[in-house]
Structure formats: structure tokens, C-alpha cells
View 1 (cartoon, rainbow, N blue to C red):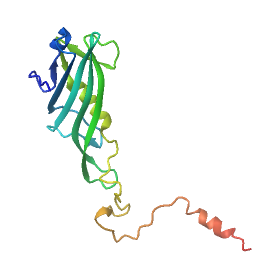
View 2: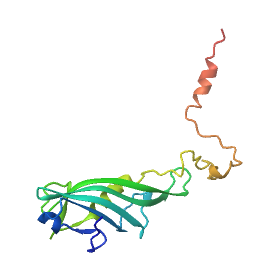
View 3: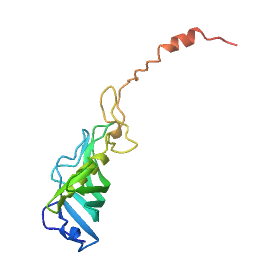
View 4: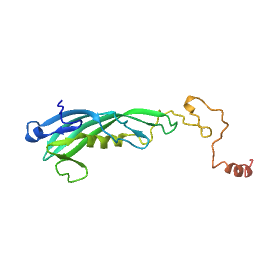
Length: 175
């Protein structure tokens, strides 16, 4: 594995472009700010791990590999904190003059892996996290977390079809 000494996620591609290597394998780790959705995020200061292979394809550099990071969030049912690990597959091009919006920019034989890692990890963050699949959520009446035990409410959920029971009972025919 080749590890460049430029910056957290900066990679020097000069030797790849000169033809010294057919492919480069690079592993990086560092902090990438701003990986967040409304209910889940990669905590500020947490490390992101990127492991990729770089390959020259014409005048572009193909980046293939993966990125992973830990995330935290708020359970959509019980509103307790929850956490997990996300992993994203990377397969994108870097170019000196990106022609399409799916290509990432590079300059002076340097590319920044944080751009592709951030975009890929954002897509993997859960939009509505769950602490676990069996989460019971909160009591709709008193707000108690039902995962820690039942509440003493005699709350009956609002059923909009309850009014139809009257019609059902009035038109009941006995055979």
C-alpha cells in the first residue's frame, strides 16, 4: 500500500501519470467535516477510512475502492441515541477539466479523496435510524420509552374508523 504524505486525503498522481505505475493502491484516514443528514451524522472529529486503487484511464484517473466511518443518530421510534458503521463503495473519475458533474476535479497531479468519500458516505447514512428492529418506541399518551417497560396509561390509540362501528352494529342482521 502506498501512503502519500501530502495531506489527509490528498494523493499525488504524478508517477501514475508518467507511467511509473499501472495502478496505485492508497489508504488514507482523517477527518471529513459535514457528513450529516437531519437524523444521522458522522461526529465531528471522527476518522473516515478510505482504501482505493487509482488507475489511469486516458487522461482521467479512475478511483475504485471503499470508504467507511462510524455514525451516530437519533432513533426514529424512541428518540434515543443510536450508532453504527457505514461503508460506501467508490468508483469515480477525477479529471483536470471535469466535463460532467459525475467527475471530480484534480490539479497539479493531485486529487482529493475527501470529495468522493464525503459524497459516497452521505448516501449511506440512514435517513430514519432505528436503535434496533424491535424498538417499541414511545407511548403516544405519556411519552415513556416502551423499550424500558410498559407505562400505566389507559391510552387507546385514535382510530379514525371507530365511528364506523356504530353503523356496523345498527345494520347487523341475524340469520
